[in-house]
Image (cartoon, rainbow, N blue to C red; front, side, top):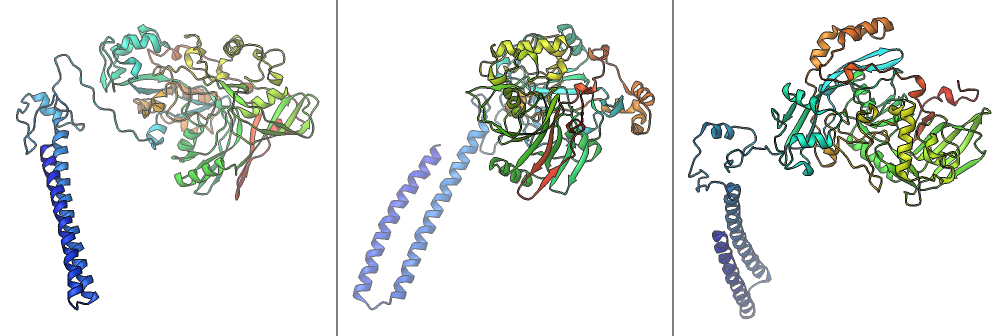
Amino acid sequence: MAWFMCVKGKVASLNALLCVGKRENNHFLRQLYRNTNVSVKTLGTLRTTQVSFINFSKQQCYTAARAMETKDASVEEDSCGTDSTVRTNRGKRKNEETDEAAKQGNRKKHKKCGRQLRPGERYVPPPQKRNPGVSFSQEHFAETSYYFEGGLRKVYPYYFDFTTYCKGRWIGKTLLEVFKSEFRAESMDYYNKAVKEGRIKLNETPVDDLNIILKNNDLMRNTVHRHEPPVSGKPLEVLVDDGEVVVVDKPASLPVHPCGRYRHNTVIFILGKEKGLSGLHTVHRLDRLTSGVLLFARTLEVSKKLDAMVRERQLEKEYVCRVEGEFPEGEVVCEEPILVVSFRVGLCRVDPKGKESRTVFQRLSYNGCSSVVRCLPLTGRTHQIRVHLQFLGFPILNDPIYGSSAWGPNRAKGGLVGISDEELLEALIEEHRSKESLHLLDLPDEEVSGKQEPKKECSDGAQEHNDQITAPESSGVACDDNSCELTQEEVKAEGSQELHKSISAAEIRGEMNGAHKEKDSVSDEASKTAKSNAFVRDNLCGECKIVRPDPVEKDLIMYLHALRYKGPDFEYSTQMPDWAKEDWLQD
Protein backbone atom coordinates (compact mmCIF):
# COMPACT_ATOMS: atom_id res chain seq x y z
CA MET A 1 0.00 0.00 0.00
CA ALA A 2 2.93 2.35 0.75
CA TRP A 3 4.22 1.89 -2.82
CA PHE A 4 0.86 2.84 -4.23
CA MET A 5 0.58 6.00 -2.10
CA CYS A 6 4.10 7.03 -3.11
CA VAL A 7 3.40 6.65 -6.82
CA LYS A 8 0.06 8.41 -6.41
CA GLY A 9 1.84 11.43 -4.85
CA LYS A 10 4.40 11.52 -7.66
CA VAL A 11 1.62 11.44 -10.27
CA ALA A 12 -0.12 14.37 -8.60
CA SER A 13 3.13 16.38 -8.57
CA LEU A 14 3.80 15.61 -12.22
CA ASN A 15 0.27 16.68 -13.17
CA ALA A 16 0.86 20.02 -11.45
CA LEU A 17 4.13 20.52 -13.35
CA LEU A 18 2.44 19.63 -16.65
CA CYS A 19 -0.30 22.19 -16.01
CA VAL A 20 2.30 24.91 -15.37
CA GLY A 21 4.21 23.90 -18.49
CA LYS A 22 1.02 23.94 -20.56
CA ARG A 23 0.17 27.42 -19.31
CA GLU A 24 3.68 28.75 -20.09
CA ASN A 25 3.64 27.13 -23.53
CA ASN A 26 0.30 28.72 -24.37
CA HIS A 27 1.72 32.12 -23.32
CA PHE A 28 4.76 31.49 -25.58
CA LEU A 29 2.55 30.64 -28.57
CA ARG A 30 0.45 33.78 -28.11
CA GLN A 31 3.57 35.99 -27.97
CA LEU A 32 5.01 34.22 -31.00
CA TYR A 33 1.83 34.88 -32.99
CA ARG A 34 1.79 38.58 -32.04
CA ASN A 35 5.48 39.30 -32.67
CA THR A 36 6.20 37.21 -35.78
CA ASN A 37 4.57 36.26 -39.04
CA VAL A 38 4.15 32.60 -38.17
CA SER A 39 1.36 30.93 -40.18
CA VAL A 40 -1.76 29.53 -38.61
CA LYS A 41 -0.86 26.07 -39.92
CA THR A 42 2.51 26.20 -38.09
CA LEU A 43 0.83 27.24 -34.84
CA GLY A 44 -1.63 24.36 -35.20
CA THR A 45 1.24 21.92 -35.64
CA LEU A 46 3.00 23.23 -32.54
CA ARG A 47 -0.18 22.98 -30.44
CA THR A 48 -0.86 19.42 -31.63
CA THR A 49 2.67 18.39 -30.70
CA GLN A 50 2.21 19.95 -27.27
CA VAL A 51 -1.07 18.14 -26.55
CA SER A 52 0.35 14.79 -27.73
CA PHE A 53 3.34 15.18 -25.42
CA ILE A 54 1.14 16.02 -22.42
CA ASN A 55 -1.23 13.07 -23.09
CA PHE A 56 1.71 10.72 -23.50
CA SER A 57 3.22 11.85 -20.21
CA LYS A 58 -0.11 11.38 -18.41
CA GLN A 59 -0.55 7.91 -19.89
CA GLN A 60 2.90 6.86 -18.73
CA CYS A 61 2.15 7.99 -15.19
CA TYR A 62 -1.22 6.27 -15.06
CA THR A 63 0.27 3.04 -16.43
CA ALA A 64 2.92 3.02 -13.73
CA ALA A 65 0.33 3.68 -11.04
CA ARG A 66 -1.90 0.87 -12.29
CA ALA A 67 1.00 -1.56 -12.33
CA MET A 68 1.86 -0.71 -8.73
CA GLU A 69 -1.78 -1.04 -7.70
CA THR A 70 -2.03 -4.47 -9.35
CA LYS A 71 1.17 -5.61 -7.68
CA ASP A 72 -0.08 -4.45 -4.31
CA ALA A 73 -3.42 -6.25 -4.81
CA SER A 74 -1.71 -9.50 -5.80
CA VAL A 75 0.33 -9.41 -2.61
CA GLU A 76 -2.92 -9.06 -0.62
CA GLU A 77 -4.54 -11.98 -2.48
CA ASP A 78 -1.54 -14.22 -1.89
CA SER A 79 -1.94 -13.72 1.82
CA CYS A 80 -5.21 -15.78 1.71
CA GLY A 81 -6.50 -14.35 5.00
CA THR A 82 -4.87 -13.27 8.21
CA ASP A 83 -3.81 -16.80 9.17
CA SER A 84 -1.94 -17.62 5.96
CA THR A 85 1.82 -17.76 5.69
CA VAL A 86 3.66 -14.67 4.36
CA ARG A 87 5.00 -14.78 0.81
CA THR A 88 8.17 -13.22 -0.65
CA ASN A 89 8.40 -11.04 -3.79
CA ARG A 90 8.80 -14.21 -5.86
CA GLY A 91 5.53 -15.62 -4.46
CA LYS A 92 7.21 -18.39 -2.44
CA ARG A 93 6.36 -19.17 1.15
CA LYS A 94 9.01 -18.38 3.74
CA ASN A 95 7.89 -21.39 5.77
CA GLU A 96 7.16 -24.21 3.31
CA GLU A 97 4.95 -27.02 4.55
CA THR A 98 6.88 -30.26 4.62
CA ASP A 99 4.30 -32.86 5.48
CA GLU A 100 3.14 -35.18 2.70
CA ALA A 101 -0.55 -34.30 3.13
CA ALA A 102 0.10 -30.65 2.34
CA LYS A 103 2.09 -31.58 -0.76
CA GLN A 104 -0.74 -33.73 -2.03
CA GLY A 105 -3.28 -31.01 -1.27
CA ASN A 106 -1.35 -28.54 -3.40
CA ARG A 107 -1.69 -30.85 -6.37
CA LYS A 108 -5.47 -31.00 -6.09
CA LYS A 109 -7.68 -29.38 -8.71
CA HIS A 110 -9.27 -27.07 -6.16
CA LYS A 111 -6.43 -25.14 -4.55
CA LYS A 112 -6.71 -24.94 -0.79
CA CYS A 113 -6.00 -21.83 1.20
CA GLY A 114 -2.56 -21.66 2.82
CA ARG A 115 -4.10 -21.55 6.30
CA GLN A 116 -3.38 -24.70 8.28
CA LEU A 117 -6.31 -26.54 9.84
CA ARG A 118 -6.45 -26.69 13.59
CA PRO A 119 -6.27 -30.15 15.23
CA GLY A 120 -9.60 -31.95 14.70
CA GLU A 121 -10.86 -29.33 12.24
CA ARG A 122 -12.51 -30.72 9.10
CA TYR A 123 -11.73 -29.26 5.67
CA VAL A 124 -14.73 -28.30 3.52
CA PRO A 125 -14.03 -27.75 -0.19
CA PRO A 126 -15.53 -24.67 -1.85
CA PRO A 127 -18.87 -25.15 -3.63
CA GLN A 128 -18.67 -26.25 -7.22
CA LYS A 129 -19.26 -23.69 -9.94
CA ARG A 130 -22.90 -23.79 -10.92
CA ASN A 131 -24.09 -23.78 -14.49
CA PRO A 132 -27.76 -22.72 -14.60
CA GLY A 133 -27.93 -23.62 -18.29
CA VAL A 134 -27.22 -27.32 -17.76
CA SER A 135 -29.84 -29.65 -19.21
CA PHE A 136 -30.55 -33.36 -19.15
CA SER A 137 -28.26 -35.51 -21.27
CA GLN A 138 -27.80 -39.13 -22.33
CA GLU A 139 -26.14 -39.83 -18.98
CA HIS A 140 -29.41 -39.01 -17.24
CA PHE A 141 -31.58 -40.77 -19.82
CA ALA A 142 -29.56 -43.99 -19.41
CA GLU A 143 -30.29 -44.31 -15.67
CA THR A 144 -33.07 -46.82 -16.34
CA SER A 145 -35.54 -47.98 -18.98
CA TYR A 146 -39.28 -48.25 -19.64
CA TYR A 147 -41.56 -51.22 -19.94
CA PHE A 148 -45.27 -51.36 -20.79
CA GLU A 149 -47.85 -53.33 -18.87
CA GLY A 150 -51.64 -53.16 -18.80
CA GLY A 151 -51.75 -50.02 -20.94
CA LEU A 152 -49.34 -48.21 -18.59
CA ARG A 153 -45.82 -46.89 -19.09
CA LYS A 154 -43.63 -48.03 -16.20
CA VAL A 155 -40.04 -47.46 -15.11
CA TYR A 156 -37.66 -50.08 -13.77
CA PRO A 157 -36.53 -49.07 -10.25
CA TYR A 158 -33.07 -47.52 -10.23
CA TYR A 159 -30.44 -46.13 -7.90
CA PHE A 160 -30.26 -42.39 -7.72
CA ASP A 161 -28.27 -39.72 -5.89
CA PHE A 162 -30.03 -36.83 -4.18
CA THR A 163 -27.68 -33.99 -3.31
CA THR A 164 -27.91 -30.69 -1.47
CA TYR A 165 -25.57 -28.17 0.05
CA CYS A 166 -25.77 -27.51 3.79
CA LYS A 167 -28.49 -24.97 4.58
CA GLY A 168 -27.87 -22.10 6.95
CA ARG A 169 -30.20 -23.56 9.55
CA TRP A 170 -28.18 -26.81 9.58
CA ILE A 171 -24.78 -25.26 10.33
CA GLY A 172 -23.50 -26.40 13.71
CA LYS A 173 -25.94 -29.30 13.91
CA THR A 174 -25.07 -32.96 13.53
CA LEU A 175 -26.28 -35.10 10.66
CA LEU A 176 -28.26 -37.07 13.19
CA GLU A 177 -30.12 -33.94 14.34
CA VAL A 178 -30.87 -32.88 10.78
CA PHE A 179 -32.21 -36.29 9.80
CA LYS A 180 -34.40 -36.42 12.91
CA SER A 181 -35.87 -32.95 12.42
CA GLU A 182 -36.17 -32.64 8.64
CA PHE A 183 -35.75 -35.99 6.89
CA ARG A 184 -38.44 -38.01 8.62
CA ALA A 185 -39.46 -40.03 5.60
CA GLU A 186 -37.27 -42.85 6.88
CA SER A 187 -36.49 -44.15 10.35
CA MET A 188 -33.18 -43.64 12.11
CA ASP A 189 -32.60 -47.36 11.73
CA TYR A 190 -32.68 -46.86 7.96
CA TYR A 191 -30.13 -44.04 8.11
CA ASN A 192 -27.80 -46.07 10.33
CA LYS A 193 -27.92 -48.96 7.86
CA ALA A 194 -27.40 -46.56 4.94
CA VAL A 195 -24.29 -45.22 6.68
CA LYS A 196 -22.90 -48.74 7.08
CA GLU A 197 -23.42 -49.37 3.36
CA GLY A 198 -21.76 -46.10 2.37
CA ARG A 199 -24.88 -44.53 0.86
CA ILE A 200 -24.63 -41.25 2.76
CA LYS A 201 -21.68 -39.05 1.80
CA LEU A 202 -20.38 -35.68 2.89
CA ASN A 203 -18.20 -33.89 0.36
CA GLU A 204 -17.98 -37.16 -1.61
CA THR A 205 -16.58 -39.04 1.42
CA PRO A 206 -18.71 -41.81 2.97
CA VAL A 207 -20.00 -40.87 6.42
CA ASP A 208 -19.14 -43.29 9.20
CA ASP A 209 -20.73 -41.36 12.07
CA LEU A 210 -24.01 -39.43 12.00
CA ASN A 211 -22.74 -37.28 14.86
CA ILE A 212 -20.49 -35.33 12.50
CA ILE A 213 -21.15 -31.58 12.74
CA LEU A 214 -22.21 -29.83 9.54
CA LYS A 215 -20.36 -26.77 8.24
CA ASN A 216 -21.12 -24.18 5.59
CA ASN A 217 -20.74 -25.48 2.00
CA ASP A 218 -20.89 -29.15 3.07
CA LEU A 219 -22.22 -31.19 0.14
CA MET A 220 -24.58 -33.96 1.25
CA ARG A 221 -25.27 -36.93 -1.01
CA ASN A 222 -27.77 -39.71 -0.36
CA THR A 223 -28.15 -42.72 -2.63
CA VAL A 224 -31.67 -44.17 -2.77
CA HIS A 225 -33.47 -46.90 -4.64
CA ARG A 226 -36.06 -44.97 -6.59
CA HIS A 227 -39.51 -46.09 -7.77
CA GLU A 228 -41.71 -43.99 -10.06
CA PRO A 229 -45.51 -44.15 -10.39
CA PRO A 230 -46.82 -45.52 -13.69
CA VAL A 231 -48.38 -43.18 -16.27
CA SER A 232 -50.56 -43.61 -19.33
CA GLY A 233 -49.07 -45.85 -21.98
CA LYS A 234 -50.41 -43.71 -24.83
CA PRO A 235 -47.65 -42.66 -27.23
CA LEU A 236 -46.22 -39.16 -27.03
CA GLU A 237 -46.88 -37.78 -30.52
CA VAL A 238 -44.60 -35.13 -32.00
CA LEU A 239 -46.76 -32.77 -34.07
CA VAL A 240 -44.06 -30.37 -35.30
CA ASP A 241 -40.25 -30.37 -35.29
CA ASP A 242 -39.01 -27.66 -37.66
CA GLY A 243 -35.65 -26.88 -36.10
CA GLU A 244 -37.01 -23.93 -34.11
CA VAL A 245 -39.84 -25.46 -32.09
CA VAL A 246 -41.00 -28.91 -31.03
CA VAL A 247 -44.75 -29.33 -30.56
CA VAL A 248 -46.17 -32.47 -28.95
CA ASP A 249 -49.59 -33.82 -28.04
CA LYS A 250 -49.11 -34.58 -24.34
CA PRO A 251 -51.10 -37.48 -22.90
CA ALA A 252 -52.80 -36.93 -19.56
CA SER A 253 -50.95 -38.15 -16.42
CA LEU A 254 -47.49 -37.11 -17.70
CA PRO A 255 -45.67 -34.25 -15.95
CA VAL A 256 -43.74 -32.03 -18.34
CA HIS A 257 -40.52 -31.81 -16.30
CA PRO A 258 -39.10 -34.04 -13.57
CA CYS A 259 -40.95 -33.16 -10.39
CA GLY A 260 -42.05 -34.84 -7.21
CA ARG A 261 -41.98 -38.60 -7.64
CA TYR A 262 -41.61 -38.37 -11.43
CA ARG A 263 -38.35 -38.23 -13.38
CA HIS A 264 -38.22 -40.65 -16.32
CA ASN A 265 -42.01 -40.76 -16.67
CA THR A 266 -42.03 -37.14 -17.89
CA VAL A 267 -42.33 -35.49 -21.29
CA ILE A 268 -38.75 -34.18 -21.18
CA PHE A 269 -37.26 -37.62 -20.49
CA ILE A 270 -39.47 -39.50 -22.96
CA LEU A 271 -38.52 -37.06 -25.72
CA GLY A 272 -34.86 -37.47 -24.85
CA LYS A 273 -34.90 -41.25 -24.48
CA GLU A 274 -37.22 -42.21 -27.34
CA LYS A 275 -37.03 -39.29 -29.79
CA GLY A 276 -33.46 -38.11 -29.26
CA LEU A 277 -34.67 -34.58 -28.43
CA SER A 278 -32.79 -32.84 -25.63
CA GLY A 279 -31.88 -29.33 -24.55
CA LEU A 280 -35.46 -28.11 -25.08
CA HIS A 281 -36.81 -24.88 -23.57
CA THR A 282 -40.32 -24.89 -22.12
CA VAL A 283 -42.57 -22.14 -23.50
CA HIS A 284 -45.74 -22.83 -21.48
CA ARG A 285 -46.96 -25.29 -18.89
CA LEU A 286 -49.64 -27.92 -18.51
CA ASP A 287 -50.79 -29.68 -15.35
CA ARG A 288 -49.91 -33.34 -15.06
CA LEU A 289 -53.49 -34.49 -15.56
CA THR A 290 -54.09 -32.09 -18.49
CA SER A 291 -53.56 -33.28 -22.06
CA GLY A 292 -52.99 -31.45 -25.32
CA VAL A 293 -50.67 -29.09 -27.20
CA LEU A 294 -47.32 -28.52 -25.54
CA LEU A 295 -44.71 -26.24 -27.10
CA PHE A 296 -40.92 -26.29 -26.67
CA ALA A 297 -38.29 -24.00 -28.17
CA ARG A 298 -35.24 -25.62 -29.74
CA THR A 299 -32.86 -22.74 -28.99
CA LEU A 300 -32.47 -20.01 -26.40
CA GLU A 301 -33.07 -17.33 -29.04
CA VAL A 302 -36.42 -18.82 -30.06
CA SER A 303 -37.33 -19.24 -26.38
CA LYS A 304 -36.68 -15.55 -25.69
CA LYS A 305 -38.73 -14.57 -28.73
CA LEU A 306 -41.70 -16.65 -27.60
CA ASP A 307 -41.36 -15.42 -24.00
CA ALA A 308 -41.61 -11.85 -25.29
CA MET A 309 -44.81 -12.79 -27.13
CA VAL A 310 -46.21 -14.23 -23.90
CA ARG A 311 -45.44 -11.05 -21.95
CA GLU A 312 -46.98 -8.90 -24.67
CA ARG A 313 -50.12 -11.10 -24.77
CA GLN A 314 -49.56 -12.01 -28.42
CA LEU A 315 -50.16 -15.72 -27.88
CA GLU A 316 -53.64 -17.21 -27.68
CA LYS A 317 -54.32 -20.48 -25.85
CA GLU A 318 -57.55 -22.39 -26.31
CA TYR A 319 -58.72 -25.23 -24.09
CA VAL A 320 -61.76 -27.48 -23.98
CA CYS A 321 -63.15 -29.13 -20.86
CA ARG A 322 -66.19 -31.06 -19.70
CA VAL A 323 -67.96 -29.56 -16.68
CA GLU A 324 -70.79 -30.67 -14.42
CA GLY A 325 -74.31 -29.54 -15.29
CA GLU A 326 -75.68 -27.28 -18.02
CA PHE A 327 -73.28 -24.40 -18.63
CA PRO A 328 -74.99 -21.13 -19.76
CA GLU A 329 -75.13 -20.40 -23.46
CA GLY A 330 -73.30 -17.44 -24.89
CA GLU A 331 -70.01 -15.95 -23.78
CA VAL A 332 -69.24 -15.97 -20.05
CA VAL A 333 -66.35 -13.89 -18.70
CA CYS A 334 -64.84 -14.46 -15.24
CA GLU A 335 -62.42 -11.83 -13.87
CA GLU A 336 -62.04 -12.97 -10.26
CA PRO A 337 -58.53 -12.63 -8.71
CA ILE A 338 -56.79 -15.89 -7.79
CA LEU A 339 -54.73 -16.55 -4.64
CA VAL A 340 -52.43 -19.53 -4.06
CA VAL A 341 -53.38 -21.28 -0.81
CA SER A 342 -50.83 -24.10 -0.89
CA PHE A 343 -47.85 -24.49 -3.20
CA ARG A 344 -47.35 -28.03 -1.92
CA VAL A 345 -50.70 -29.23 -3.27
CA GLY A 346 -51.14 -26.51 -5.86
CA LEU A 347 -54.31 -25.35 -4.16
CA CYS A 348 -55.78 -21.97 -5.19
CA ARG A 349 -59.02 -20.08 -4.66
CA VAL A 350 -60.72 -16.84 -5.58
CA ASP A 351 -59.73 -14.06 -3.20
CA PRO A 352 -59.63 -10.23 -3.41
CA LYS A 353 -55.96 -10.38 -2.36
CA GLY A 354 -55.12 -12.62 -5.32
CA LYS A 355 -53.66 -11.81 -8.70
CA GLU A 356 -55.70 -10.32 -11.51
CA SER A 357 -57.15 -13.04 -13.74
CA ARG A 358 -59.48 -13.19 -16.74
CA THR A 359 -60.99 -16.16 -18.58
CA VAL A 360 -63.56 -16.26 -21.37
CA PHE A 361 -65.87 -19.31 -21.58
CA GLN A 362 -68.31 -20.50 -24.24
CA ARG A 363 -70.46 -23.63 -24.21
CA LEU A 364 -69.97 -25.97 -27.17
CA SER A 365 -72.41 -28.78 -26.31
CA TYR A 366 -74.61 -30.28 -23.58
CA ASN A 367 -75.54 -33.98 -23.35
CA GLY A 368 -78.15 -33.70 -20.61
CA CYS A 369 -75.67 -34.30 -17.77
CA SER A 370 -72.51 -32.35 -18.53
CA SER A 371 -71.31 -29.62 -20.88
CA VAL A 372 -68.28 -29.20 -23.12
CA VAL A 373 -66.90 -25.68 -22.69
CA ARG A 374 -64.39 -23.71 -24.73
CA CYS A 375 -61.93 -21.79 -22.50
CA LEU A 376 -59.72 -18.83 -23.41
CA PRO A 377 -57.43 -17.85 -20.50
CA LEU A 378 -56.26 -14.29 -21.08
CA THR A 379 -53.92 -14.42 -18.08
CA GLY A 380 -51.73 -17.27 -16.89
CA ARG A 381 -52.49 -17.93 -13.23
CA THR A 382 -52.06 -21.27 -11.52
CA HIS A 383 -55.10 -23.51 -12.16
CA GLN A 384 -56.91 -20.46 -13.58
CA ILE A 385 -59.48 -22.30 -15.70
CA ARG A 386 -60.26 -24.80 -12.94
CA VAL A 387 -60.64 -22.14 -10.24
CA HIS A 388 -62.85 -19.88 -12.36
CA LEU A 389 -65.11 -22.77 -13.37
CA GLN A 390 -65.46 -23.73 -9.70
CA PHE A 391 -66.35 -20.11 -8.84
CA LEU A 392 -69.05 -20.12 -11.54
CA GLY A 393 -70.52 -23.30 -10.07
CA PHE A 394 -69.46 -25.63 -12.90
CA PRO A 395 -66.32 -27.51 -11.80
CA ILE A 396 -64.61 -29.84 -14.25
CA LEU A 397 -66.36 -33.19 -14.11
CA ASN A 398 -63.51 -35.23 -12.57
CA ASP A 399 -61.32 -32.52 -11.05
CA PRO A 400 -59.69 -34.16 -7.97
CA ILE A 401 -59.12 -30.80 -6.25
CA TYR A 402 -61.76 -28.27 -7.26
CA GLY A 403 -64.54 -30.83 -7.59
CA SER A 404 -63.91 -32.18 -4.10
CA SER A 405 -66.59 -32.09 -1.40
CA ALA A 406 -63.94 -30.68 0.97
CA TRP A 407 -64.98 -27.23 -0.28
CA GLY A 408 -68.43 -27.65 1.22
CA PRO A 409 -71.86 -28.53 -0.18
CA ASN A 410 -71.69 -25.77 -2.85
CA ARG A 411 -68.02 -26.44 -3.60
CA ALA A 412 -67.00 -22.78 -3.28
CA LYS A 413 -69.51 -21.49 -5.79
CA GLY A 414 -69.35 -17.72 -5.77
CA GLY A 415 -66.16 -17.88 -3.71
CA LEU A 416 -67.95 -19.00 -0.54
CA VAL A 417 -65.85 -21.55 1.34
CA GLY A 418 -66.79 -21.10 5.00
CA ILE A 419 -63.61 -22.61 6.47
CA SER A 420 -60.02 -21.45 6.86
CA ASP A 421 -57.31 -22.32 4.37
CA GLU A 422 -55.70 -24.71 6.86
CA GLU A 423 -58.99 -26.51 7.49
CA LEU A 424 -59.66 -26.68 3.75
CA LEU A 425 -56.27 -28.23 3.04
CA GLU A 426 -56.64 -30.73 5.86
CA ALA A 427 -60.16 -31.72 4.70
CA LEU A 428 -58.93 -32.16 1.11
CA ILE A 429 -56.08 -34.44 2.14
CA GLU A 430 -58.30 -36.42 4.50
CA GLU A 431 -60.91 -36.97 1.80
CA HIS A 432 -58.37 -38.41 -0.62
CA ARG A 433 -56.74 -40.45 2.11
CA SER A 434 -60.09 -42.09 2.87
CA LYS A 435 -60.54 -42.83 -0.83
CA GLU A 436 -56.95 -44.10 -1.10
CA SER A 437 -56.34 -41.53 -3.83
CA LEU A 438 -53.71 -39.28 -2.25
CA HIS A 439 -51.54 -39.81 -5.32
CA LEU A 440 -53.92 -37.51 -7.23
CA LEU A 441 -52.68 -34.61 -5.10
CA ASP A 442 -49.02 -35.34 -5.94
CA LEU A 443 -47.99 -35.18 -2.31
CA PRO A 444 -44.51 -36.29 -1.20
CA ASP A 445 -44.03 -40.03 -0.75
CA GLU A 446 -43.86 -39.87 3.04
CA GLU A 447 -47.34 -38.32 3.20
CA VAL A 448 -48.82 -40.72 0.65
CA SER A 449 -47.47 -43.68 2.63
CA GLY A 450 -48.55 -42.16 5.93
CA LYS A 451 -45.03 -41.94 7.36
CA GLN A 452 -45.30 -38.24 8.00
CA GLU A 453 -48.01 -35.86 9.02
CA PRO A 454 -49.00 -33.17 6.50
CA LYS A 455 -46.71 -30.18 6.70
CA LYS A 456 -48.12 -26.91 7.92
CA GLU A 457 -48.41 -24.05 5.48
CA CYS A 458 -47.13 -20.54 5.98
CA SER A 459 -49.71 -17.81 6.41
CA ASP A 460 -48.97 -16.39 2.98
CA GLY A 461 -49.58 -19.71 1.31
CA ALA A 462 -45.94 -20.53 0.73
CA GLN A 463 -44.65 -23.81 1.97
CA GLU A 464 -42.20 -24.03 4.83
CA HIS A 465 -39.85 -26.12 2.73
CA ASN A 466 -38.18 -29.17 4.16
CA ASP A 467 -35.45 -30.28 1.81
CA GLN A 468 -35.93 -33.88 0.86
CA ILE A 469 -32.79 -35.80 0.03
CA THR A 470 -34.40 -39.07 1.01
CA ALA A 471 -37.71 -39.08 -0.81
CA PRO A 472 -37.85 -38.77 -4.60
CA GLU A 473 -38.29 -35.13 -5.41
CA SER A 474 -37.56 -32.83 -8.27
CA SER A 475 -34.70 -33.04 -10.71
CA GLY A 476 -33.76 -29.41 -10.84
CA VAL A 477 -36.31 -27.85 -13.12
CA ALA A 478 -39.56 -26.26 -12.35
CA CYS A 479 -42.47 -28.60 -12.30
CA ASP A 480 -45.06 -27.93 -14.97
CA ASP A 481 -47.78 -29.40 -12.84
CA ASN A 482 -48.53 -26.63 -10.39
CA SER A 483 -49.73 -29.14 -7.86
CA CYS A 484 -46.27 -30.66 -7.89
CA GLU A 485 -44.17 -27.98 -6.19
CA LEU A 486 -40.54 -28.54 -5.23
CA THR A 487 -39.36 -29.40 -1.76
CA GLN A 488 -35.97 -30.99 -2.23
CA GLU A 489 -35.10 -28.46 -4.88
CA GLU A 490 -34.78 -25.57 -2.51
CA VAL A 491 -31.21 -26.27 -3.58
CA LYS A 492 -31.85 -24.57 -6.88
CA ALA A 493 -33.87 -21.75 -5.31
CA GLU A 494 -30.77 -20.90 -3.32
CA GLY A 495 -28.62 -21.00 -6.45
CA SER A 496 -27.42 -24.58 -6.00
CA GLN A 497 -27.29 -26.84 -9.01
CA GLU A 498 -28.54 -30.37 -8.50
CA LEU A 499 -25.80 -32.87 -9.25
CA HIS A 500 -27.87 -35.97 -9.85
CA LYS A 501 -26.22 -39.09 -11.08
CA SER A 502 -27.26 -42.71 -11.39
CA ILE A 503 -24.74 -45.03 -9.81
CA SER A 504 -25.96 -48.46 -10.84
CA ALA A 505 -28.22 -48.08 -13.84
CA ALA A 506 -25.74 -50.19 -15.78
CA GLU A 507 -26.24 -53.05 -13.35
CA ILE A 508 -29.99 -52.91 -13.86
CA ARG A 509 -29.65 -52.76 -17.64
CA GLY A 510 -27.19 -55.63 -17.54
CA GLU A 511 -29.82 -57.87 -15.98
CA MET A 512 -32.46 -56.92 -18.49
CA ASN A 513 -30.67 -58.82 -21.31
CA GLY A 514 -32.45 -56.61 -23.80
CA ALA A 515 -35.85 -58.07 -22.99
CA HIS A 516 -37.53 -54.67 -22.81
CA LYS A 517 -36.31 -53.57 -26.26
CA GLU A 518 -39.08 -55.52 -27.93
CA LYS A 519 -41.82 -54.24 -25.64
CA ASP A 520 -44.02 -53.07 -28.51
CA SER A 521 -44.29 -56.55 -29.99
CA VAL A 522 -44.68 -58.68 -26.90
CA SER A 523 -47.71 -59.41 -24.83
CA ASP A 524 -48.33 -58.32 -21.26
CA GLU A 525 -47.18 -61.75 -20.09
CA ALA A 526 -43.85 -61.37 -21.85
CA SER A 527 -43.55 -57.87 -20.41
CA LYS A 528 -44.10 -59.25 -16.92
CA THR A 529 -41.32 -61.77 -17.52
CA ALA A 530 -38.99 -58.99 -18.63
CA LYS A 531 -39.95 -57.01 -15.55
CA SER A 532 -39.11 -59.89 -13.24
CA ASN A 533 -35.71 -60.25 -14.90
CA ALA A 534 -34.96 -56.52 -14.69
CA PHE A 535 -36.36 -55.71 -11.28
CA VAL A 536 -33.58 -55.43 -8.73
CA ARG A 537 -34.69 -55.50 -5.11
CA ASP A 538 -32.83 -53.40 -2.58
CA ASN A 539 -32.44 -54.57 0.99
CA LEU A 540 -33.01 -51.05 2.42
CA CYS A 541 -35.81 -49.92 0.09
CA GLY A 542 -39.25 -49.82 1.68
CA GLU A 543 -40.97 -49.54 -1.72
CA CYS A 544 -39.54 -52.90 -2.77
CA LYS A 545 -41.56 -54.50 0.03
CA ILE A 546 -44.86 -52.90 -1.00
CA VAL A 547 -47.14 -54.07 -3.81
CA ARG A 548 -49.09 -51.05 -5.02
CA PRO A 549 -52.14 -51.54 -7.26
CA ASP A 550 -51.95 -50.04 -10.73
CA PRO A 551 -53.96 -46.85 -11.26
CA VAL A 552 -57.15 -47.07 -13.28
CA GLU A 553 -57.81 -44.86 -16.29
CA LYS A 554 -60.04 -42.41 -14.40
CA ASP A 555 -57.12 -41.65 -12.08
CA LEU A 556 -54.87 -40.77 -15.02
CA ILE A 557 -57.00 -38.21 -16.81
CA MET A 558 -58.82 -34.99 -16.14
CA TYR A 559 -61.31 -33.62 -18.65
CA LEU A 560 -59.22 -30.59 -19.56
CA HIS A 561 -57.38 -30.44 -22.89
CA ALA A 562 -55.13 -27.81 -24.49
CA LEU A 563 -56.66 -27.69 -27.97
CA ARG A 564 -54.82 -24.87 -29.74
CA TYR A 565 -51.80 -22.60 -29.35
CA LYS A 566 -51.76 -19.62 -31.70
CA GLY A 567 -49.27 -16.80 -32.34
CA PRO A 568 -48.90 -13.94 -34.85
CA ASP A 569 -47.53 -16.24 -37.56
CA PHE A 570 -48.18 -19.80 -36.36
CA GLU A 571 -50.92 -22.05 -35.06
CA TYR A 572 -50.67 -25.54 -33.58
CA SER A 573 -53.64 -27.70 -32.68
CA THR A 574 -54.71 -31.26 -31.84
CA GLN A 575 -57.80 -33.35 -32.36
CA MET A 576 -60.71 -33.12 -29.94
CA PRO A 577 -60.43 -35.82 -27.23
CA ASP A 578 -63.08 -38.53 -27.15
CA TRP A 579 -64.68 -37.18 -23.95
CA ALA A 580 -65.29 -33.81 -25.69
CA LYS A 581 -67.51 -35.30 -28.37
CA GLU A 582 -71.15 -34.28 -28.23
CA ASP A 583 -72.56 -37.81 -27.86
CA TRP A 584 -70.08 -38.88 -25.14
CA LEU A 585 -71.57 -40.36 -21.96
CA GLN A 586 -69.75 -41.02 -18.71
CA ASP A 587 -69.48 -44.67 -17.67
